[in-house]
Image 1: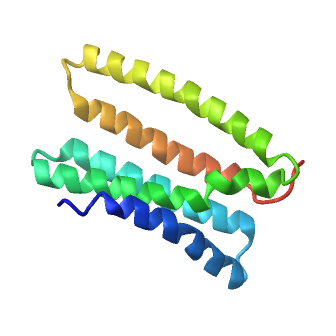
Image 2: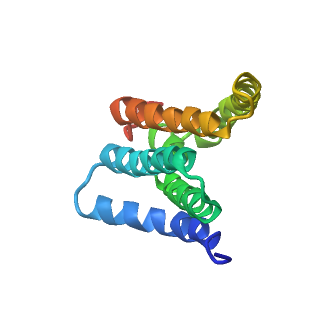
Image 3: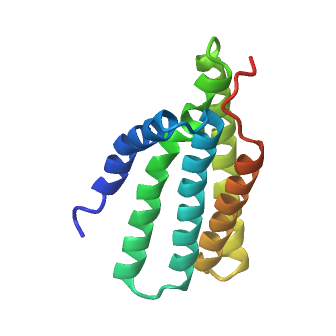
Length: 151
């Protein structure tokens, strides 16, 4: 199991290659971004939900590792999206994205603490809550995400 952490590294490097292949085969930028992000988020959500059902350490570790590997596909999804819709202002838009990410990180830690306090330290509920966020995020981005220039 010592090699599993390299999966995130591998998928992070391969995701742009897969996205480029989709683009060269005629898929639109919007479809490519939505597809890569959806696979990432739905895959992570599924893994986190399965972790909440697991009682074995090795299975949980493998599922967490797979979730993080799928996270690497994010690098061909919303992570590069500011360049698509604001090519002249990519840095500023990416900075705004990161600011909102920091806010959600703060809220997520608070919510995890509240869930743990309210549920007698049941981590399964935290994983389910996070899995739901992933699935909802995939749904919203799948409907509203774009690769078209806006600014």
